[in-house]
Image (cartoon, rainbow, N blue to C red; front, top):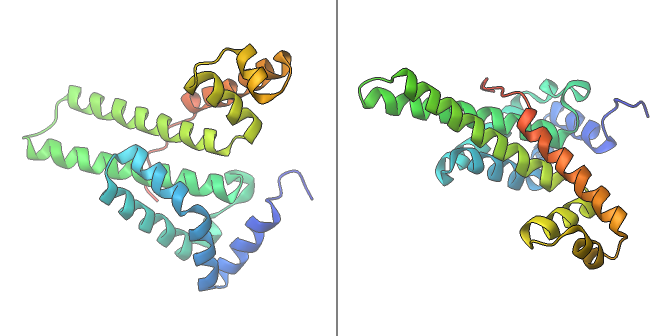
Length: 190
């Protein structure tokens, strides 16, 4: 398999969606609905809006399966997360713009506050995705160190690995999380 080739499941799923197999959409939904909904909810902080974005994302994928380009988009999972963040950010901007109009217009400070909120929500959603996508050993090390407040020695003991290995896992996990801060913000709608 070529380096840039998508995993076999991703290729087969795209082919099945392109043929219009409703069962493929159901399988895709079963696999990624939780990811899509939780990402949308993280950005929008609104259950009903997250439900709407979830429907929009899966509707878009059903109608446009060939929009997925593995070399550009990575895995199907990454593509679904990117579509969700994009659509949720679009919805957040729409809602804030509508609220500003209802209040009698928006100032430059309102626009700046909106962009800061959009950026924070997007970074948080990306960080959630990164943590959920991490290999279990990295995620376990981060959870031990940061949620349970253990140092690298305690983390090593808890995980049954050497202290050097615990430090390596923590360092790599933090590097992956740091990429959430540097990811470009793409506010385009689907």
